[in-house]
Length: 526
Image 1 (tube, helix red, strand yellow):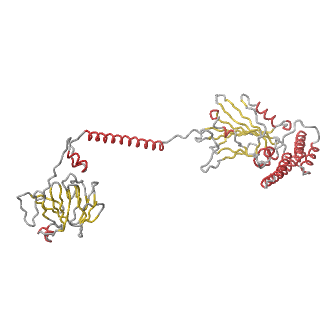
Image 2: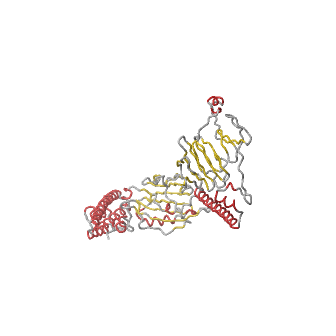
């Protein structure tokens, strides 16, 4: 058993300590309460063991063992003074334990197996108290206590409360403030400091409110559902991986295909030589895209160039407004290319609905093809990309069989012209004469078609196909030689190859004419 003696401004108190943890302080909840205004509510913590006591400081006012500050959980030697404050101190020593009858083994059984502890301590005013199970009961003067009989239990009287001017309870404040208010009344400086504290507290509350409001506004701005921006340019339909989605339809003539965006495509109607297709494009699938495909045979087609046929088609559309046709530099296909004419138009239906669109017009032999795409006038700007997209997928033999009549053609024999064309284009390996050979092929086909000579027309078509195959092989061979010379930095050789190809492909109706002169693959190194 260990005896704790606490000396404070109100006197000296003695306590018997059992093994366990004890809180010493001024608070009502402290295990050992010290009635001193300079002591904190929870000043120190004591850990009592069989070997001694360890002390831990809990107060910002500090504690000291023989003028050595107490930090955390240090041993407290017996008979060493522990200073709790400027007016309070504590010391402990070993004390012999006197066992009363209430602590005998039989008493433990009489109490349901729970032993009781009764120790007599002496307070500061001649008051005798009994600590039983870590609870203190006061025994007043003149009362007697039989040995082994515990005094009647009663709550300890509360310590006197010191109240400063204005009704402030000094026991609720820490020692420095308590000391100041305890020794003198409020002065103007105290009032000013109090007002400043109140003002800063309100200011901090306002700043905190503003910060919370800003955070909430940011969260709402981030989480609030936002409407997607309007599509500036409506593009081709894609899947989640960014791949284009396409739908193919056979053209009415069956010689090529129409490729459209896979956006609910459907055939509206189909007549002889004409097919109408509709798609609903855009992010919300609310923009109509209509495609009309027409394939027709042109009577006496050898009399008309492609430009003549375009003029006839435009004149047949009464009330339509057309831009100037684009007749040069437009090709379908990847090799020699199939020339086409591009026309933009605006039309208004009887109910006042305006449509805008683009037309591709091309031919192959006696067949004239018209591919027309249009949308509502309200979507003119947003649909510019899709209105100018190519929707025609032509096979290479369709391109190779293309020929443009020579109008007017010089009279003569179709068979003789064919022989001249074969001599220049197939029998001789002279690319410089290929432009002249192509003109002879066109004249032979024009004369054969006008005369109805099927044999010569068929022979001329087959010879023209072989001639274009020869041109294709030559073109790609020269392109590889040109690029190889550029890689070896042989600029003169590369320039010579390019000039030969410019002569060989000098027909503006051939896509290779433009490629050699403008594309990056044919650019000379710096």
